[in-house]
Image (cartoon, rainbow, N blue to C red; front, side, top):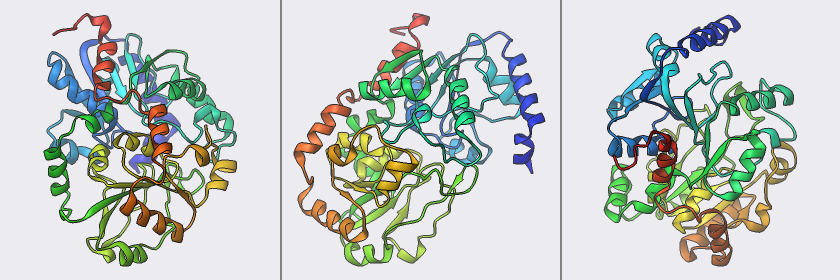
Length: 398
């Protein structure tokens, strides 16, 4: 009932008017509002930026905008927050000097004059984005309205983070963004380059993985046309988990990490300790650090994971449909992938077997990929972003 009220045209109009009016009030110049994946996570580049600021710039008031269902997560981390669309939130967000966010905001939420909006985004693109999509298969949208909404949102951005030159060019095209791109590497990846062996061991222990078992991370993306309803997507495993357990159960534990848009609740109890659902785990960087192999499809996770120099397997069972109809790609993944592309269960299991024994299928292809996409990743992306974001306040060295 509450969701329906929030989505009604009258309510959205009232939200917009309230936001506009309160945005006219004087800015709280030291207030920074953070949000990650619609307020549902404490994660990604907004988290990295938040933690850097909390450590290096304690003179700022740092607050998270969160979904109602996420209170326990933020309470557990002792992170200050306001719940979205509450009175306190309306009195807080429009008056903040800075917004830091990693996905698009609702169209009715305009950036108030004087607010600086840092859009971090959340991945290096393989699949086409935004204005570059030829056909829109997303429920509740058509090509015209979808692209209009993207342009309305990107006009609000003051800065947009990019992990490399390849992404910078695509982001400008895909989002119609003409503002300043901070080409810095992704803040969320800094941890991959700074974590020590003890930290990695602690993460693995906290995840209750036996020391003698390896970890394979399976992190697929969502399909635009496979959904329950608007904003809630399905996902169907295209390999038999019981067969995988029978063949590899003595060697590794399978971590499954679903895209944040996938609304299904998976029940893996039948597979015992072999399968662990880590979809709600706060920081995917931790999962990268403890994983020995990544299996993915069209998700941007492989761009981040490549920096670790560990094997990647691409399970693209629907590659022709995804490439030619559903989305399209920005480059020839079949030619440039840093790991083998497989399209069926048999080949997937054989690729896993090879990676467990031999590592990369082609070390040369992997190196070429890293050189092209990971050259800015050095553990200092967050520092570069924050220095640019706060440069106009002349607070360097504080």
